[in-house]
Every structure is written in structure tokens, then in C-alpha cells.
Length: 142
Image (cartoon, rainbow, N blue to C red; front, side):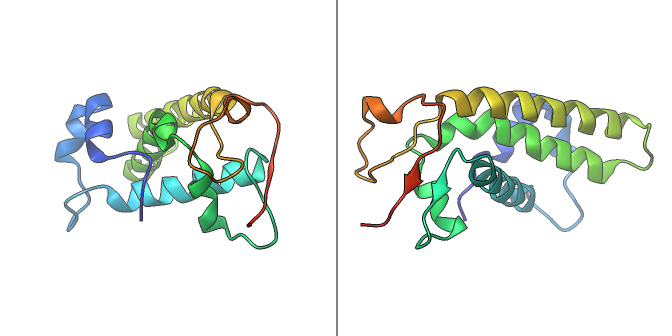
């Protein structure tokens, strides 16, 4: 499965996470995949991408010209998830970081979606009409 972020993106923001990988895991790949699914679902829910009846949720990502525009939002989402998992109580440092990164995710997601380029006609070419629109587009399979 593809993701919008990688461990290196996380380590650039929180270098100490290299030491905090979950037991038995060599990466945070599962968290990246979960964040990816949640972001794609949110893009559809928020009608940034509107899928026609012949499309599945998994098809939504195919309409994003530059998925890297969601990199920072995804990194924040993953960090929020990781710190929430590491937290032992509602007021410890890990939960504070989780809440902070969740807030940063919401802000970055909002900003990123204002200029997100959606491949409306599925031709792989980024046209002027596909960049930075603030309305939804119904995607239809041709």
C-alpha cells in the first residue's frame, strides 16, 4: 500500500522516535498506512474528491496529482497516533504531543486541500482547472 509519509519524515520532526519503535516492528509502516486510509476517507467525506458510483474508496488516491502535498499532514497524523499509543494517561507528555500533532494535522490538512490538485479527467496532466479549486468534483469512470 502506498502512503503519504515515511519514517524519515517522522524522524525529521521527532528524532528520538528512532528509539521508540513498537516491539517487534522495524518501522511505523502500519501507522503510515492507517493515516493514509484516514486521510483518503477524509478527502472523500469532505467532498474534496467525490467518487461516482463505479468507484471504490481505494480509487480516490489515483485522482491526486501530487500526493506529496499531503506529506506533512500525514506526518502529523502519524505522530498524533504514535504519541496517543505511547500515552499512559490523559495528561502525560505523550498525550500532550498527540493533541498538539492532531491540531497541527487539522491545520495542515485544511491548508493542503486548498491547493490540492485533483486529476478531474484522469488524463495524468495537471491542467489549470485542476489546481487549487475549492469545490468538489464528481469523478466518473470513462
